[in-house]
Image 1: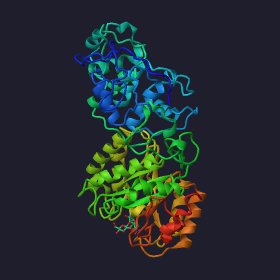
Image 2 (image 1 turned 90 degrees about the vertical axis):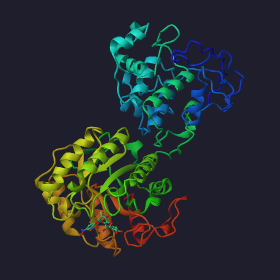
Image 3 (image 1 turned 180 degrees about the vertical axis):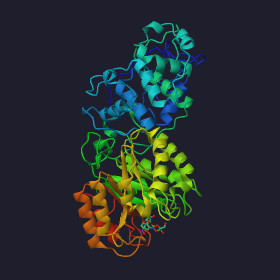
Length: 538
Ligand code: DCB
């Protein structure tokens, strides 16, 4: 919390004041506004904006009821507000500064360059200067940087002071009506920004680009300065061992899933059941409870058929809520296009392409997303004739938007036709092939296929497996499950178990009446759930 006393500042020269933006406040201090900020007068030019932004929970005031509109805003404060709006996941950082995980995320997202704000943090607490602020704002929120150079540069009397590296973003902001000159027509590129001005800039950009506040990860609440406190979306739990903030964006090296720095990572967690049937188990409480038991990944089965997405597209909002909950809990999230009774992925390839483009646009800045483009191809289809061509269509569509997320690809016979993959693999980087097993049905012969695939350089991810037989029922097959767990562990293979629900079938991990509000105890787990949860950390 800042303790500096508020000094009344005359904001008459606000550079970002739009024409006709209202009267100039010269004596805000002591007047109380409708929202209760003691120093934001209802006649202030920024009154409406500050009030609205505070109501949305994007900025907040200080404990003493003030907002300090004329104070400068620091680099870390300004940038992390945008990180929260966009829901960037915190990253492992070089310093212990409160903002460092999100500043690292902003740097990695390309919002600013290393020298503008080194990750060693020495500039984090300095006032941010206007040209850098506008650049970060535009990188974070703008959907295009279009402008006419002659028109926009002519509007700026002090254009010669603008550093060339900010031409595109600042002139685009001028063109979009987001930034403007002061009363003298100057932009003052090297001057600090005030809190009121920052608020106005962000609001204009959000309005212009129809930005909605993401409900994704936050930094630790306790260490945020007042300016950056989020008042709406629930605040995330701590960084999780093996989670996204620790491992960052994943990549595939050889056959091994690795973290951002190239060290091997194993993800273990739960798959949902069909989201159209069991949405209640992908709540924040359930996901957090699974994470607290040691999992670092969740997979969400969005069925295409059986009253799934094709017939009932609104199930997509269950999916995105589930994914957001997962990221908020610092876990990886797998978006599963769950074909099953429609065993040929080509049947709904158009819908799949559209869907994955939308997901990629939504999550491209998140580090915790894995796309699974077709659950279990099956029926009279082949790898080379159906699934591979499907993958060759969907993967580039995702990559055009989200260039380096890991993508999981299925194969015929419910993800058991690994031999076909070995002889005709895809040519993309950062992909893994799925193998699914059910302990009561799939035994050593399938482990042999996995071993053979890995030996041939095929990266394997077990995105679904069960302790039951292949119907999801029967068993529990504890001995065979143990063989599988030892095998996967020995091979560093990641997995998700089917399924986090309380359906009356063996593979369901929960008993009826489970309640995750206080975590999930063993007594709330089924026979299968008890076994599975005991393997999250092994
Ligand atoms: C997979 C599917 C998954 C299915 C489980 C268990 O299917 F990816 O959706 O889940 O494995 O069968 C089951 C649920 C049931 C639900 C049913 C239909 O547990 O509650 O009624 O889906 O929605 C597999 C996996 C392997 C094999 C066959 C199937 N196999 N299959 O090897 O023969 O036919 O669904």
